[in-house]
Length: 83
Image (cartoon, rainbow, N blue to C red; front, side, top):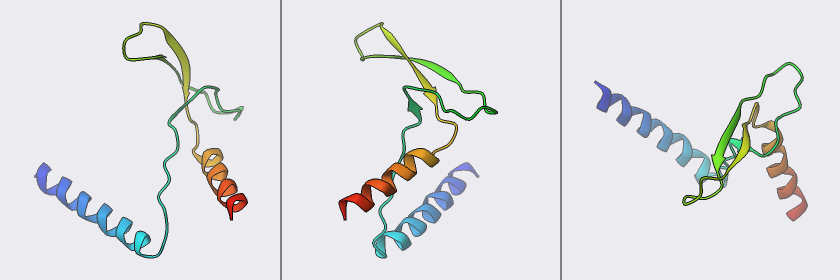
């Protein structure tokens, strides 16, 4: 059933994360929405207008990332310069 699938998925994710955590790895998340679209000429970008605050009706354009590669490269590059 659905609950069992969710619990199995949770257990698998915990096991994988635990494996890497025990070896000193750190999990990094990248932004899903960015202020400028990607520059890949063959990939269409998706624009999303987001509110600038919870109490405002003003919106700002954001774009769904087409690939997390650039953000992950920045994480790695920042780590290399910090060492």
